[in-house]
Length: 170
Picture 1 (cartoon, rainbow, N blue to C red):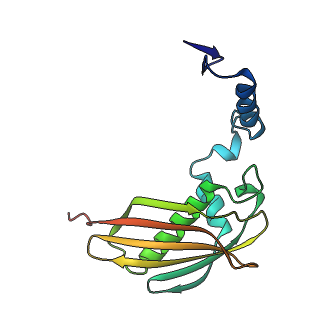
Picture 2: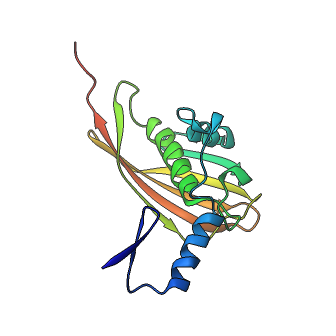
């Protein structure tokens, strides 16, 4: 049926050489490395993202931010990690939605989609431009575009849908 390697279940029809390549890849990117100290503190990842971004322009329905692709948010291939793209898109989208939605309304991220068109290499300056596509009584949709500043190349696009939750009436 299947053989086990440690706690990993490996299908019998897998070629051992391919299994070793997969395990080697995971070892190289540090999948099994333990996370200690400051890295395991509550909301540490949000602190990294918050410290990267700087707001360049804020208008009603539009927010533009910039950041540099630092090694701390780079992946194995020395480009912006996909998780960092999502976290940055979420932050910029929330900021953009807040330019249209009253502070007494709580926003709930219901959906986010990301298109990875290319890569933003390590140390590249990136511009994130967010704009409200639609904002109504119950939801707001925000689109963002990530562009490498030097080349003007579009590398990622996102679309986030936020639901407006009514404020509690006590």
